[in-house]
Amino acid sequence: MRVSTLRDSCAKSVSGMESDVSRLEAESETLSRVSDLFRALMDKEVIDNSKVVERLLTEGLQAVFDDVDLSVRSEVDVKRGKVSVDLITVQKHPDGTVTEGSCTEIYGGSVSTVESVILRIVVLTRRGLRPLLLLDESLAAVAEGYVPRIGTFLSLMSRRMGVDILAVSHNPTLIETSDTSYRISKKNGKAAFQRVRES
Image (tube, rainbow, N blue to C red; front, side, top):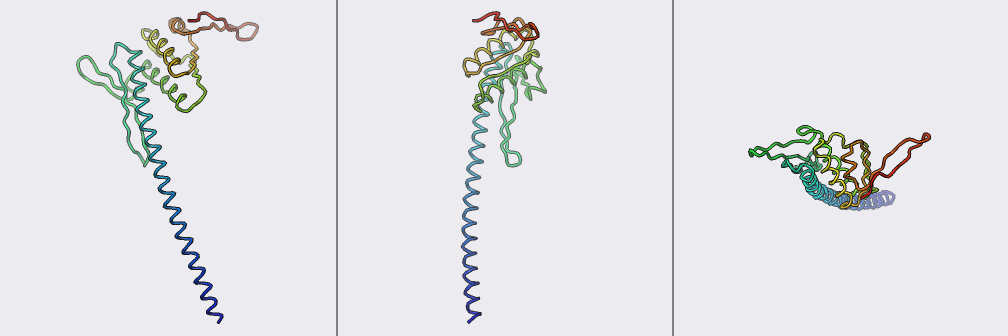
């Protein structure tokens, strides 16, 4: 009688464990599918965002460097199971040749500075962060001949993307292209702001 009771108890326990195993396997399968779905959605967002960034960078480069045929294309790849995006700057020369590569390796400070500013604006807007971009002498690398165009471009981006851009600069040309400019001076150990111009 005792052996029969132990057998029935063990059988019931095994049955319960088998039920638990089946339930856990079903949950694991569901979680695996949810994980695959999230990964697919994230990959799609990365790819979609790369196209937006590609378009904005190209537009920005063409607006500032109007005498050079510059554009940006994105290369999307999967590395170690994750989507990877490389931004390639492309220049078409008048003789038909094409130069392409990373803006920091192939091109000078002017191009990489413009791309960096645009990327920061994209991150601010896409992430819903406070719409304020601070540029503390960040545009010093831009060649003098392009400064008027980058000033106009920043004003356009500010209005279009809804981002306030505060650029600290000693460059009078950049100051002239700003919507509003201030001169900062030191008075009695404190910073004093004087409006220079407003459009």
